[in-house]
Image (cartoon, rainbow, N blue to C red; front, side, top):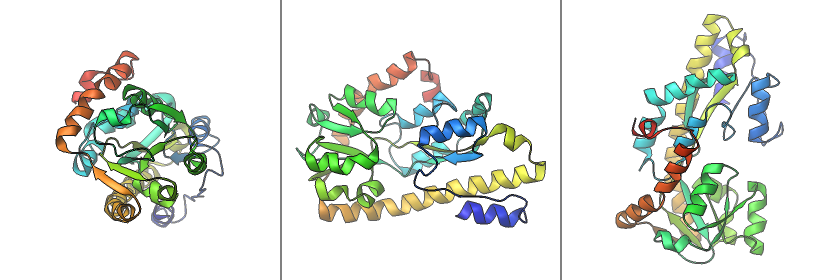
Length: 278
């Protein structure tokens, strides 16, 4: 809403924005394809793999430790370069945010204190390769399900647990069908603001500047709100679920256990160790 109001106001109506919510135009992956072809001018969210494979870096397990580090990364020159490289694939990305915040695990079997506690659990994972590979590396039996099916899958025991941002765990009432919540801050994800490059290039320079400015402000506002709300969501979930925080000592074990995930994607040519070090 902020983006629509600000763009229309600052351009005096020269740019009109139509917003569509709740996947009425398609899945996140379908939307990224529509943006690439020009059938849709823009989108934001989890469908970004065609824009630049380096976005997988932002989903690597235990890449950053907290919000300060995550925001420093997402606003860095490194991220700006990744956004810029997406032009080769037909996308203009003026800004990238953090997708809802840090992910947390829930399950009905046991508290997750160490990597061994995840072994053998049947867990729903997002339909993104990095989350599937991470789960397998930790000995999880990953089940790729649309999030709309997760509640019933948990309720009926089709899966033992899932992981997601705490806002989704609360908003989708996952706490009604789960027993344990584990806070490890194991991963975030990118939230690139993507528009069709040809459409963007047809805009006058003054409108391009306004568009980019508002897009950047929108993503920073989104990150700020998600950061502020995350603590409150955790407090609410602590009332509903048996909650544990992974200790610093055990976080070291998790980082060691998930190192093969990094190498897997490096071997696929998505990025290099130098990219990660940067």
